[in-house]
Amino acid sequence: MIGVFDSGVGGLSILKALRRELPAHDFTYFADTGYAPYGGQGDAYIIDRSRAVARTLVEDHGAQVLVIACNTATAAAVHVLRQDYPQLPIIGVEPALKPAAALTRTGRVGVMATRFTVGSAKFLSLLDTLKGQAEFVLQPCDGLVDAIEAHDGARIAQLCEQYTRAMGSFGTAPGRIDTLVLGCTHYIFAKDVLVPLVGAGVTILETGEPVARQTRRILESSSLLRCEGRGRVYLLTTGSSPALQGESQRRLC
Ligand code: DGL
Image 1 (cartoon, protein in one colour):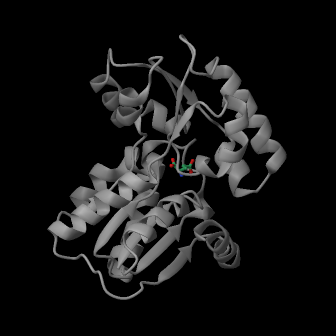
Image 2 (image 1 turned 90 degrees about the vertical axis):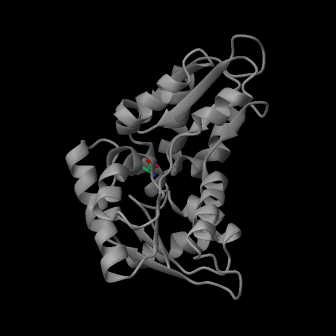
């Protein structure tokens, strides 16, 4: 079984790509909704929560592989979890800065992420490796995870408008931002709002498919890859189980 976790429903976007890539595998998805959002918290809180969730998935439910479907938890805790479980394959997610630097034609890339992620050492060192390759306009998006969790359409629209405006002009003309990185797994669920704000010519990057392909490579190299049959999805949460059940039906189809 592959354990997948996020602070809430955002990681379902990664789980969807994982199921498409690895249909024969069983997944257990843990939404830590009772302790979300992580993005306005500090290291200690996010590390504690990530450890508690990993313990449940690995020690209580026997996960053989762990996917951290959360940029914030990856930035804070992937190194700690790898120390805690040195034998366990652990796959994290990080904002798609490298693909964005390769794709941009104007040389300007917008990055939306949680406040924790954009200030984290892991993110800043990734940014450092790309120095000179593109200009990255970083936008912490306080409140957006909460609005997405709450299905608050008016608030999602207001925050997306505010944050895209703060980043500057989007488009394919010189000097504009032509590539937008969604550095939080929740934000893809606001894509319908973001596209009209930035324009259809802007490339929007998220990480579901690359993470799914990386997970397949790791399963292959650990001889854990299954190709026969149809896997199942099990759900765990520190929030409301019926709510997560409903979300997974909506988001995974
Ligand atoms: N989906 C998480 C991420 O990718 C959201 C973090 C939060 O709870 O603020 O960063």
